[in-house]
Length: 364
Image 1: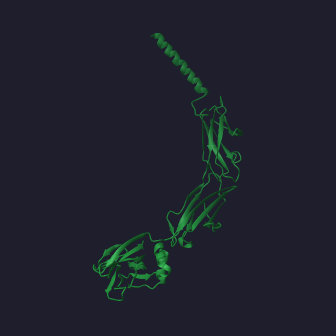
Image 2 (image 1 turned 120 degrees about the horizontal axis):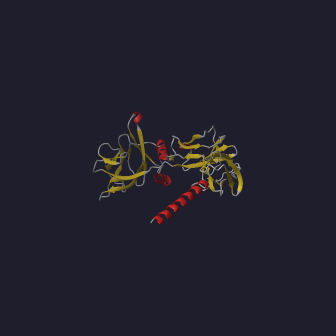
Image 3 (image 1 turned 180 degrees about the vertical axis):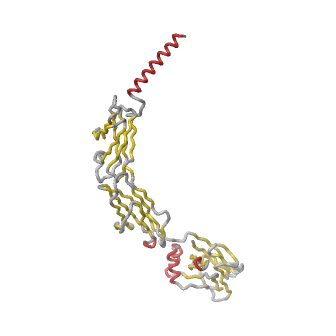
């Protein structure tokens, strides 16, 4: 038993002595035992600074190579040192963007341990396009927001250009800061125009670009529905709320039974209430059908302004299209609501008399 314990003790002592000697020569470390840090560099920077810290204080210098070629040797004092490497040393041409490089760092201690460090070329931009849809009739600006930031070098110039669709870029006037915004107003463009913005920053021989685009959208009615009016219920329809009501309606049936001719057995139409008015859309060459299909808000408002508003519409025929304008509130709270009505079908009695109208309509 004593012999076994003695052997174990001897082995433990040998292991301890061996570990102590090894740790003295090669302390526990990852690769060359270097901690490498840097603030990095961007496309606009001409250099990068590396900070080195060795776990083995016997390391007095670190050799840096790139693809087997010597770059520089960094002296360490008490295991610490730093070095600034230019684009030329990193094999990055001036004025040319790069994808970064991988350096080899070799310590000058026994066995020459080495490790790799990647210098990445960062994006200097923070860029945000307009957050909301820009409509053709929008008078309030939406913005491209940007910020450009370097690590070491100063930005000397920022240029902004704008192109519309496939047109040539045009430089925008004014001075642009490193943190700034570019406005886009819908009424400055046509529907479906693509507005392309490019921003170029310059620092020394380096340039970097960011770009984005936005499409100016047609302002079309996004909602549609249907309702019917007939002379038996004495009810109307509230166009803003979208419901059938008895008193506070915007539109009600206009109906008078009379024999006019062999094809039209009654006078039928509709009447406005609460100040609601109507303008008939031109039916020449079936223009009214395209007008309703497109359902453009801007065109609707313009046609109403150019037309002759009516409180009462009589002798309507199937397929006709009417613009309506309903108003709510007064003073500063006054708001106008526009939409399109189309005569979809007539409700007829067994005797062939038109008793009501079925409408389809578009609104926002």
